[in-house]
Image 1: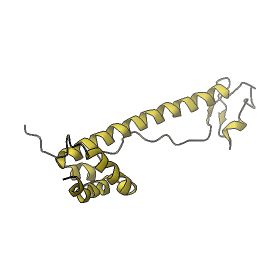
Image 2 (image 1 turned 30 degrees about the vertical axis):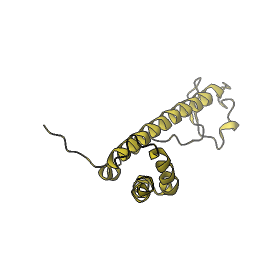
Image 3 (image 1 turned 90 degrees about the horizontal axis):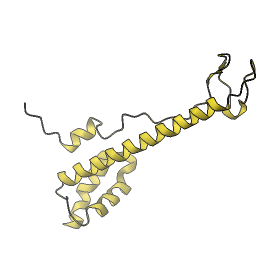
Image 4 (image 1 turned 120 degrees about the horizontal axis):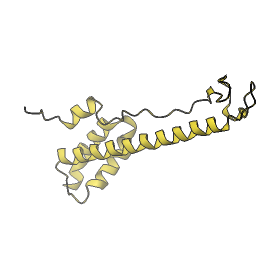
Amino acid sequence: MKMAVVSIREKIEKGLYHSKIEYPVPRKFRGKCPGCDTRYYPPESDSVKFCSNCGQSLRELLDRQIEDRKAQRILYFEDRKRLEEEFKKDLFTDLNLVGHPKAELLYAKAYQLGQSSGYTEIYNYMIELEDLIR
C-alpha cells in the first residue's frame, strides 16, 4: 500500500503541527478532604489550609495539584518543541534549504515576522525571504 505524500501546507491545514496535549490551565483548588470526603471549591487556593469539617490539613492535596500541573506543563512544552522542530525540518526540506548555512537565520526572521499568525504565515515569510540567501 502506497502512502500519499502530504505537503507542508496540508499538514498545517490539518493541524499536524499543533500539540494534542492540552495546556494545563491554572484552576482554583478543588478536591475532597482525605479524612472526611468534604468537597472544597474555595475562591482562592491559598485560603484553604484545614478542612472545616474534620480539621485535617489540605496542604498536601493542594501541593499535589500544583505538582501535577507543573508536570503537565513540562509535557506540553516538550511536545510543542518537538512539533516545531518537525515543522522546521519539513520546511527546510520543502524549500531545499537542508544544510544551507543561513537556513536557521532565515527561519528566525520568518518566525519573528509571522509567529503571531501561525505556521502558515511563517511558511509564507520563508518563501518571500528565501531569495535573500540564494
